[in-house]
Length: 339
Image (tube, rainbow, N blue to C red; front, side, top):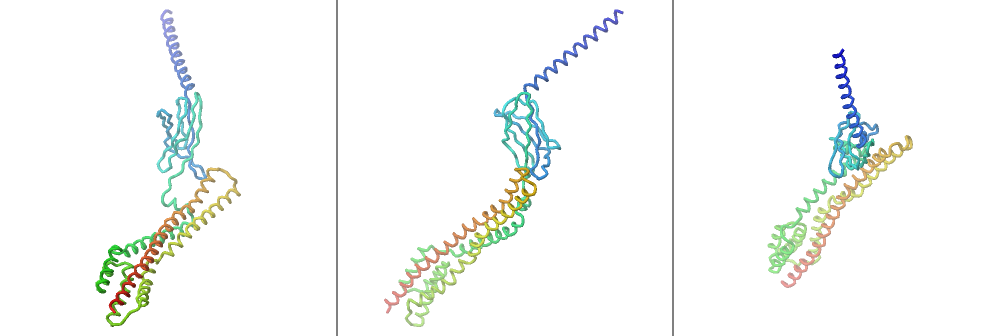
């Protein structure tokens, strides 16, 4: 009987101790849960089906830099507990998706904050241009033609530059004409190259031919030879410029056409199904505006290069007229002095 009493006492003590420990643990858990909060939610993609996005790294950071991390499950859901009260910024990261940062959330003691976030897949080259629809093909054609002719015109203008500076070139020609050394002047033109040199060369050869034939040559004959040479040089510089001007004009129109088609499709969907998800509607409208952006991206460089090339042609024309008149006057005066 005495042994039974001792056993009963020991069992009672063990039960009492276990009850105390359990009560302490429960008190601790109640205290923790009542002084911290929970942030949970779900991450979905921006498709029409709003599919859950798994394996998204969710970072919850406060102003002091302390952060809490969790990850979404296969259903796109996440949960972070034991977060002290305060204001936090949430960031969402996953490979293949655009990062989402700066989502504010306020955690309260014992609170349960629910956050729903949408993430957009990163575009590849093919998916990006697929958004343009059928308008992609005329825009692509315009861009290829524009790049081709811009490069071709750059090479043409680079080849047309004189190997000798204009001032040095004119000084040499003037010096040879004063010494009545026409063939040296012609050789200088051949060495310099470029539209100006080629035009002056035609006038000098015309004058040299008249000297060989021992006849007088009029100012009009020299000017006519120079004008004929100009008709060969200037069109070469102006070639393909109308194509660039046309592309600069029609590319924005193709882009606007794509936007109008996209807007018609978007508002047709609204008429049939209602507004639905405003974010989804905004995404459809932004895709429609891509074609306008694409058209402007093609047109702006075309317009810039067209004006640069056109101003270059005008500069050559003015330079040829001024220099050729000066050379013609020197040739005619030299002929009169000889006489």
